[in-house]
Amino acid sequence: MRDNAVHTETEQQPGVKKVVIAGGGTAGWVAAAALSKRLQGLVQVVLVESEDIGTVGVGESTIPPVQLFHNLLGIDEQEFMRETDATFKLGISFENWGQLGDRYMHPFGTTGKGSFLADFQHYYLHGRALGVTAPLGDYCYELQAACAGKFGKSSNSMISYAYHLDAGRYARFLRRFSEAQGAVRIEGKIAQVQQHVNGDIRALVLENGEEVTGDLFIDCTGFRALLIEQTLHSGFERWDHWLPCNKAAVVQTAPGANLPPYTRAIAHDSGWQWRIPLQHRVGNGLVYASDYLSDAAASDRLLSNLEGAPLFEPRILSYQTGRRKQFWLKNCVALGLASGFIEPLESTSIYLFMNGVIRLLRLFPFNGVSQPLIDEYNQQSIGELEKIRDFIILHYHQTERSDSDFWNYCRTMPIPDSLAHRIELFRASAHAFQTGDEMFRLESWTHVMLGQRLTPHSYHQLVAGLPAQQLTAHLQQIRDTISHAVARLPQHSEFIRQYCQAPDYTRC
Ligand SMILES: Cc1cc2nc3c(=O)[nH]c(=O)nc-3n(C[C@H](O)[C@H](O)[C@H](O)COP(=O)(O)OP(=O)(O)OC[C@H]3O[C@@H](n4cnc5c(N)ncnc54)[C@H](O)[C@@H]3O)c2cc1C
Image 1 (cartoon, rainbow, N blue to C red):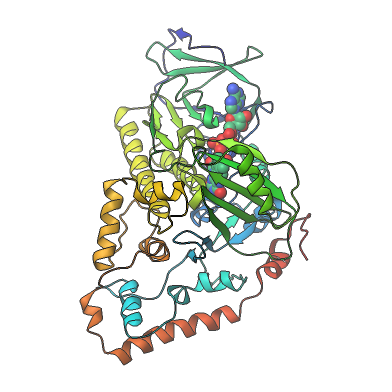
Image 2: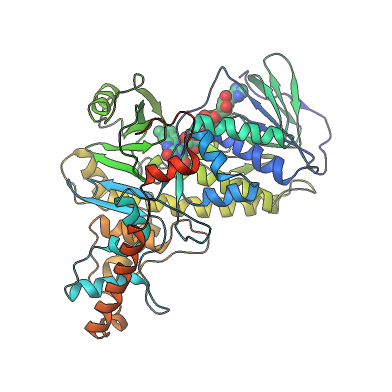
């Protein structure tokens, strides 16, 4: 991009009639799909992207709200899954996190059945004290289905799930969808960003000289952040002291015989490795902190821990954890990697920009951009992001691992006060909570805290007063109901074959 903005005297439009999206990765096309569908006839949507630059090409594991986003757009699930080689995801299997050899699952859905006065973990802990040895996961339908490699859904089923999807195909799917709703795509490299005298963005100027003017600009240019940072200088709050992983070696492999309905996150001595099973291949990545592991060692380690044959040489991606100080600044809203990045561990990035674009629709500046709208958007977005950040730091910090400098750092590092409070509360009394704007439910916190070996000193005394027979019968009944329901489910691979098999489905 040519340096710095050109200032013009052009008057700004009072209302927003034209939105220009810079960048056509997953974030850009998610924004285009939502805005073109929901603002049809009210606002013109234009997207500029450059095939020469390309996209980050990862981001294949999601969380359940992606379904709500698709519903909002009227996207047909079977068509979407066929076209993106998607599979179902019921949670994440965390291996070697609390200690080498440990394994726990962070499932979607509900776990057990609590009461108005006490959440389920108190009943579970009292059951343990009474000698009921069944693990927490036995009280979660999604977790039991995941461990059995099963999946099924029907119009009256209550299973909570997300997807694994091919990021490139998903962007192309959303592009077709957006163009059908009237969004216009312009191919070209943005060479310059022009501003009005008040600092608002006026136009993107492409290398061929074409000017793309607009009233509201969405920065989806990935880590480059051409508009929000390079032009408007939002500023960046770094989180690497809490989230020290800053690189990933990534490679795809041929599919194996199994199609697990969950993501695997396997910790190693300087980070962790993901495995994401799609219909036609497996996505693999080794996330690491470059202070503790070299690129060459990371690639070697990734290649020696694959289950299938690699389809190409590993690629190294670099990132910086943290967030833009302002996501919405002047007439520019940053979505996706342009707005910041926590880290891939809990698959939250796609969710965050889907929710970001829904938030923008809710606060849409039909009558012009105003500071109260900007402030409200930023406050909501930052509040949501920081709670997710805390949840992810928990995975690194709450560990007994002491086998490497990386884990010694993570285990002993200072953490945000907000997270320290949650950990101490749970340790003292087994209380977990979730606030209104929070993505991860208290059950998620409970699974991860117990899974990472955080043992509460006590639990709710009202539960402790329950007669032993009554409690054990209650726990047994939950386990029985779940195991009967799981027994009736088909294998995940079988369900995919019947429901949404992609043309290049290659599993046996
Ligand atoms: C290692 C890693 C693993 C991840 N795993 C997950 C995951 O499992 N789940 C999840 O939800 N998220 C994950 N993410 C995040 C996810 O990949 C991104 O949030 C998602 O892909 C969106 O990226 P983006 O669209 O913001 O940026 P990009 O994909 O980088 O797209 C940027 C776009 O901007 C365009 N562009 C840039 N500069 C110019 C220019 N000058 N002119 C014209 N166009 C330009 C490019 O052409 C491209 O179209 C992961 C990220 C990383 C780094």
